[in-house]
Length: 131
Image 1 (tube, one colour):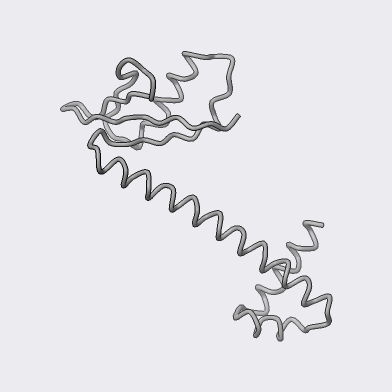
Image 2 (image 1 turned 45 degrees about the vertical axis):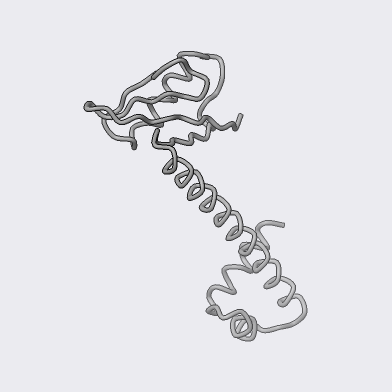
């Protein structure tokens, strides 16, 4: 099950205290924030051992007000860019298949799209495998 958990990270002399949204206080402490995901997943598993938390999306925000908004905006922009890139790749692959079906040669498709012939071949292979 995919769901989002927002975690407030508060800097301490020992590292970072992690407080999930809705918790009364910190549930974990990590030395560096790259260790936050496993710590929070461990907490979630202990709190609800029957649920699968492996697909949880963690949004870790610093306690400092404005920086938290900036972190969230940067994460959102990254997710949106990845989705746009995936959509563009799918559209390009579909176009390559349609151009091929219309009788265009691989060299011509490559020239139209500004990619190499080998990329055209790869896209055709991917497209055929997807159907």
